[in-house]
Length: 192
Picture 1 (cartoon, rainbow, N blue to C red):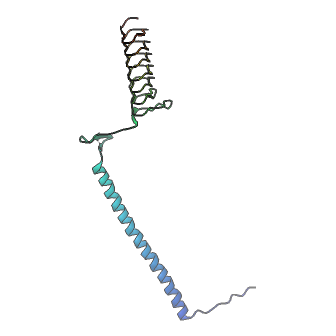
Picture 2 (picture 1 turned 180 degrees about the vertical axis):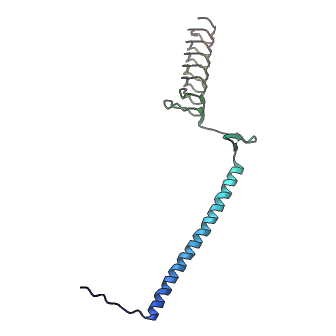
Picture 3 (picture 1 turned 90 degrees about the vertical axis):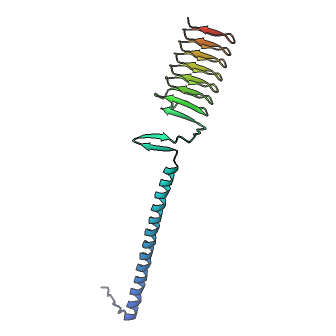
C-alpha cells in the first residue's frame, strides 16, 4: 500500500499561491481586454477601408450590374475576353474578344475577334467580325462575316461570302464564293 503523505500548507504559503493565481488571472483579463480593443480597432479600420475603396471605386454596382465612372478612363494592357475563354487559344497581348461559345482565338498581338464561332485572328492587329471558321494570319488585315474565309495578305480584307481567299497584299473581296484575290491591290466583287 502506498501511503499518501499530507503536507500541511501554512497560511502564508496559501496566500502566496492564491496571490500568484490572482496575478495570472489579472494578466489573462488584461490580455483579453487588449485583444478586444485591438479587434474593435481592426474592425473599424476594415470598415473605413472598405468604405474608402467603394468611394474611390471606378464602378458602382446595383442588382448585379456595374456601371463605370463616367469621368474615368480604363486601361487593360493585356486584353479583354467577354463571354467564354477558349482553353486551346494562346491569346495575344492587347486583344479583345467577344466569344459566346469559347471557340474564337485572337492570338495575334493587338487582334480583335467580335462574335461568331471558330474564328482565329493570328496576325498583328488583325480583326474578325462575326461569321464562322474565318482565319486571318497576316498583319493589319480583316474578315467581316462570312464562312471559311482566309486572309494571308497584309492589309487585305474579305467582306463576307464563303471560302474566299485573300493571299495578296492590299486586296479586297466583297462576298461571293470560292474567290481568290492573288494580285496586289486587286478587288473582287462577289461571284464564284
